Length: 95
Image (cartoon, rainbow, N blue to C red; front, side, top):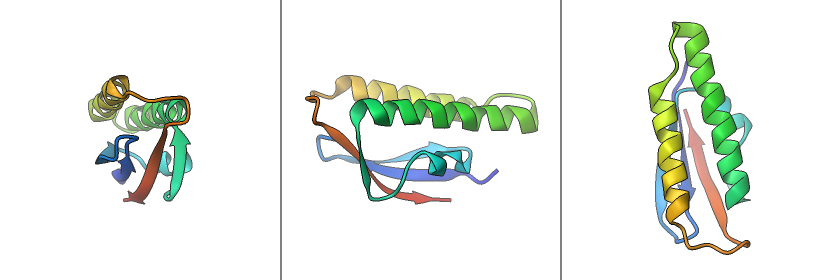
């Protein structure tokens, strides 16, 4: 399973490289696209849960790194002072 990284720009301008143990994340995000915060969180949850499930199907155990990444995304979003117009930009996706 190829690891996938995607780089995002948060509404406050900071950039961060995120991790997925599977390319499934590229099915949900497109480089160069901005997502409303709620949509970004929803897509992240779906993608990282699917990625963890793919690891479980292949190796017999869920991917703790995927769930840890989701926890970090949720924590980061919880700290944002955003309005309903705030967006998170997906800058790149690499495998």
